Amino acid sequence: MRDLANIEELTQLPNLLAIIAARAGSILNVADISRTARLSNTTLTRYLTLLETAFLVYRLPAWSGNLTSRFIKAPKMLLNDTGLAAHLLGLSETRLQNDPNYLGGLLDNFVGMEILKSIGSSQTRPSLYHWQTMHQTEVNLLLERRNGDVVGIEVKASGTVGPNDFKGLRSLQAQIGEKFVRGLVVYTGDRTVPFGEKLFALPISVLWH
Image (tube, rainbow, N blue to C red; front, side, top):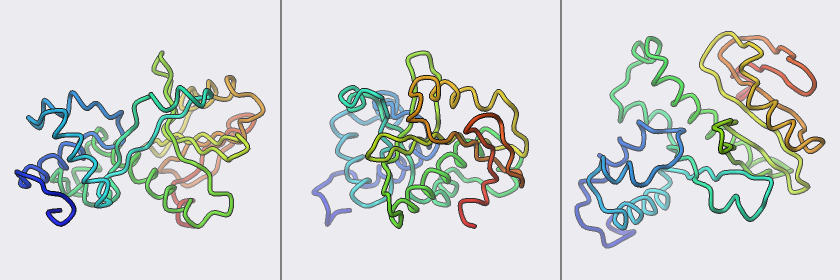
């Protein structure tokens, strides 16, 4: 880190990284993190840039059908290594199994980073985003090809899936029409299940099989 930047109080970075880990997969709220870490916005911005440069964190940009407005929407913050995130939070396998609050965020982070890695070897090289409306309707991950075709991906830390889990995907489908190629809910079960036109639940194992 010192080689990358002339930075003071380097000992604050592990604490900052732990704070980010606790918010993995959530919308980046600079003011909230600044208060929690007791860092000025200017210093925090420098530190976040440094963590990105060192490939420790990744900013997942927001998607909008309007190319201009997507650049002003808040990104989500992911940790490149989900195992590191769990370590920073002091989590064990048993605690993760018993505390869905932690599991949900870490699973979102894991799926996002696995898809990001897959993009690197993809022939189509889609862009990866998240999507959220003013009314808090959201889709965890969104893949967009250069021609505008979109695949929406929801992540659910559960072994079962119901119609309500597709609420955000159906909203996205209604908004973009024919550009909506597929809507997927990735879950911890073991079956592929159709849930309507272009909508499917997929086991998380599809990420590595």
